[in-house]
Length: 259
Image (cartoon, rainbow, N blue to C red):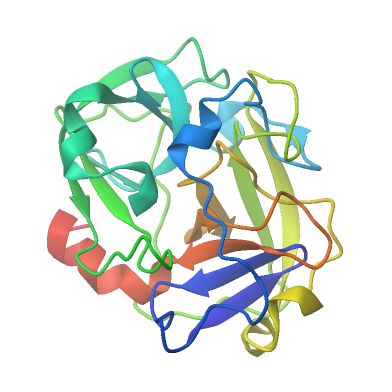
């Protein structure tokens, strides 16, 4: 199992979680699916700060029937990377993307999707290979409010101690009032091996992604290193948020999108 740990945030590779090797002993596997983000508790990153979209111009809002459900990242003029539990091929007719806005409900551009490609090994029962690629119906015209984020190489590690930024419009806590503005928080990475020791042994709490942030970016060193996937509560001490590691599926991204 390939993992990396952030302070109050644990990122798990797309590989290695099976029924024979549970994610973390004694800890429920708790996804943050899109339907949670549609509740009245929609909001923002826990323990974070407001940011302008130009600070994280790769960030997008995935929308269903006009409402924000998940985040995503622009990886080319044609492709968005998000979490598989946020989008499947059956969702395409009802889903759109908002780019170029700090507000989840207004501004920027609304774009239609041509197709949604879930990772072929996605397993919703254990939240494994939690990736979907979204192909836009038309190419984006990039500018300083919506542009691409670089990707790591296949199996490229995250440097110990590197600062990682997660952003989105998810809840401020497990249950919170909605905030329409984009937020972010920064967390330092820790040795990958520590994450596999015990899920409950790490994380001081207070900083994390939350419901509505699923599918959004985790960025370090100018590269998209993770996709918000799941967690137990939000910023709960001892229960880090879990991110799917982009480097573990870099070859698949290239195969599907030519990016």
